[in-house]
Length: 88
Image (cartoon, rainbow, N blue to C red; front, side):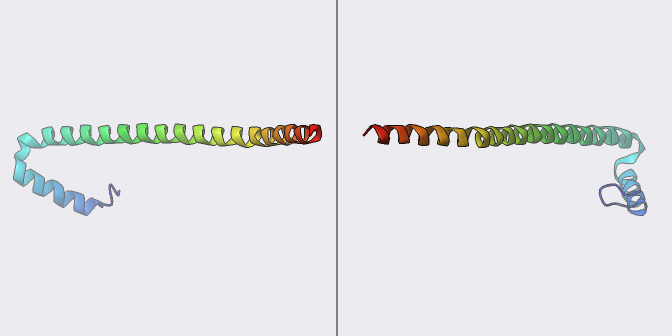
């Protein structure tokens, strides 16, 4: 079991020290608040990741659309330039 790079022996030492410092009455409350904080961080992380992916997909789609349209615009501009120079 490895949580945040902390193994089981280290976790036991941390829990023992916390029990000695805060006492048995305060420890469940601290555990709940830490659990809520970790859950909030995970939700924010997932939201950030989904927003980042959405923006990356939009940029990729924009680049793809531009790559498809640009050669057509260049070809039509070249044709109009050729027609203009032929008239002169």
